[in-house]
Length: 539
Image 1 (cartoon, rainbow, N blue to C red):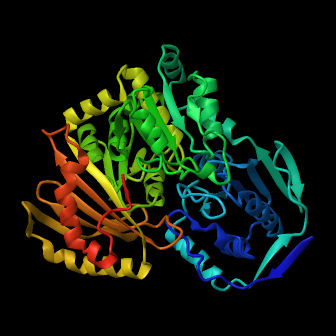
Image 2: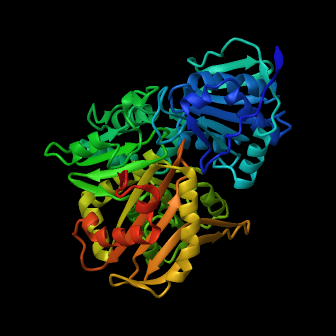
Image 3: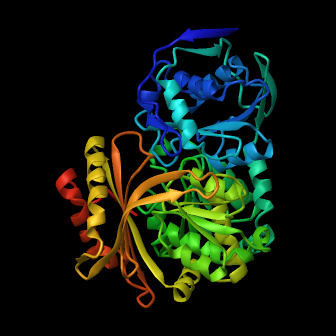
């Protein structure tokens, strides 16, 4: 039943920071998925006795690609697959299943926050035995394999029925179809005070959670409505759809506009939240109030002792370089470890495994802890609900009291999308060469204290990574430039602006950052080089 099929390499299968992401119409080409998966299996080698986890966010082509992976895994000698029922599994749930079952890795089919459908995006995330993203050295080997792969192995058998939970066998490989929600709920119960949150809802507290027609809908329905007692209908857009119902499943102020409009209306609930396509990103809102991801990480860290699993203390906290410095002040106050890493969740894994950090986060709406090795959207939402239940305060009260104590980092991200890759690369190269010459110069009362590439030296494996460019000003303000690694075509130039204040805590962020934005454009020459005078997305 095992066939060996001749194939021709594709030249574009280099993985980004979180896996391979391409347009759906690219992925459906003959042997595209097969080539990529065979390259991974070739790099792993000796698959006998190994177990892998498989699932996806339900987007277009998930069902077909999962069947390909099942048959190829069996043909290549994998001993066991653990698969989410109907092929569904969120990224955080997948990480949990890998760790709980001591699996050798996993494949989550998702392009995360990118749109789905026939004209949307598709992706494959490959995690290793840590439950987290693979190191760059491994992804480089996989890419090298994709350039020379000449054949793949596959079992020539009918598709596997993934609708029923239970055990099956295919070409000598064991298949366990599970309900990943059950294991995830068990994990969350072990972290948070479900009784306190249930009492919060019983007292009349209201929420709206937008699953954006993506994979966390069933998780949210089970946890928030069925277990914790949130009013029926609190979870909206909870049915995973191949095209996400036309929604762009990115939980930010632009793409989650239905939730944002609702929370900024007079009908707003006490609490609002959203997750992305595969459930690893989150957005937090109060009535007519938005919490930036940077502030959210700082607030969660400051309130760790309110959560049962963290009452005895936490090791430390880490953030991506692009994330605001808000959490740095919290770490200093609590006397815990603090680390700044490149963008990409894989950089947190070494710090978690070596017990240097417990919490971590990225400005791109990703927050998590060492309970798994991925960011976790529902975990962040439950953390906020637990704080609210324990403190008896609203989202806005909690945030404003935090600013009163630590000061406020006015912070926003400006995305310039669809830029020609060559143009973006040239701009970043020229900018990197230019930045060291800016030290000591003043731009409209903002004096540059330091400027250059951000270089991270990993304290565990001692590897060194260059990721993004930073301009620091004497007053603590910052500009960060980097190219996104999560797109499926073209390049996205991301510009992050931060201005710190201990006295002005109630101003409009965009107004506070207008001057720095103009300076950022002047230094980078983005308008002249790209033709874009305004960002495509502002969050």
